[in-house]
Length: 244
Image (tube, rainbow, N blue to C red; front, top):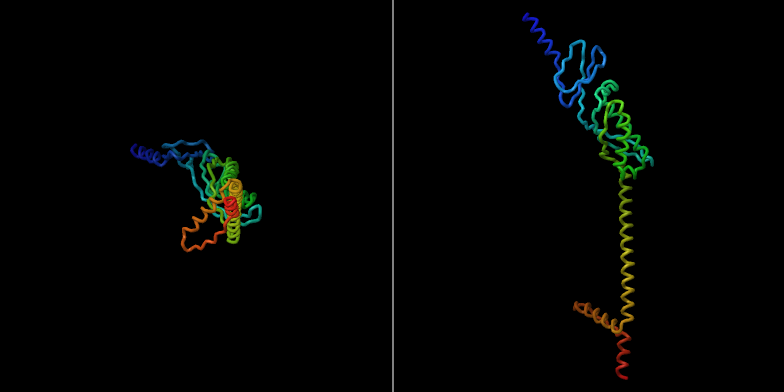
């Protein structure tokens, strides 16, 4: 009787399995899928039953560098990180052999295909849109595996050295173009203001004399300057009127 009790307890101990909160148990009975086990202690009868635990937490998978050719025939190296979790544990076990490896391969091929459909300028300036496109494709393809893709982020886009120099020259030329435009716009405004000031000086009596005296005062502040003063014609005419 004691031996029977010991045997039953031993059988119970070896049949007991613990499923953690972040796991789900996929149960097989005599080779057939018989259901999903929730977290807790579960009995698995040796020989007749088998249980596979599946982690349902979000996983961050680093997609290694991928060589790709853009639509405008530029060779680039792109890497990314993909965040996903198992939404259906039974599909993750029954429909794919190794979902972790399968997701990595799917992300690599999808990233190369998407990069090949865009030009380099779009790849560099619209990373979020391209990442979202990759996420949508991978999410749809992995749906039959019971995988839900949360996000895809492009980490780095590496260019050939000669292309980096070309882009640097292009950016420098763009900055110079903007500087010339800003300078020319400033000159147009300054010329307009100077024309307006000249018109006022020409029409206001005595305004030119005051401007001349102001200029002489500004120049004479430095004793090293030599001033050659040309008497305006208006001053001579004023003396002529005074003598008459």
